[in-house]
Amino acid sequence: MQKWICTICSYVYDPDEGDPVNDVPSEVPFEDLLVDWVCPVCKAGKSFFEPM
Image 1 (cartoon, rainbow, N blue to C red):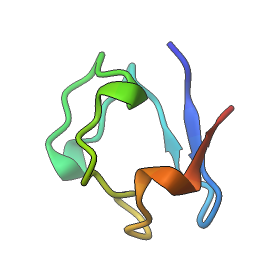
Image 2 (cartoon, one colour):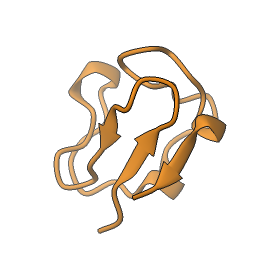
Image 3 (tube, rainbow, N blue to C red):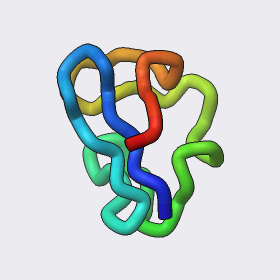
């Protein structure tokens, strides 16, 4: 699955790992994250991410 990188802090959202900080299980594509999901490192919104 597609990985996405935060343009603010360079955190990489990897769907294979999910986001345990925000209680997102593995195998959830970036596109399916809630609209209010934020980067677990810098709290930037989804609009600050781009595909890797």
